[in-house]
Length: 101
Image (cartoon, rainbow, N blue to C red; front, side, top):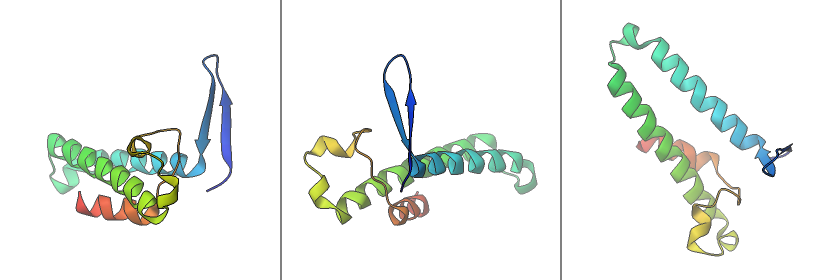
C-alpha cells in the first residue's frame, strides 16, 4: 500500500507505510471504544485488556505469516518474519488472526 511517509530524525530515517498507520489507528480506536463501553456490556477491565492484547498479537502474527505464504520469494531467511524493516502484512491474515485470537 502506497505512499510511504519518510520521517527524518536525529537517529536516522523512519519509513511508515500507510497500511501500518491504518493498522495502528484501528487498534487504538478499538481499544478506545472497548474501554469506553465496558460498563455497558459488563466486561471487567482485566479481561478486556487481556482479550485486546491477545487479539492484536494474533492479528499481527497471522497477517505477517499469511503475507509470506502468499509471497514466499520475499522470505530470504527465517529472521525476515520478525524483521520490522521488511514490510508486508495481509488483510486476510489479520482478520483470520483476530478471529482466532
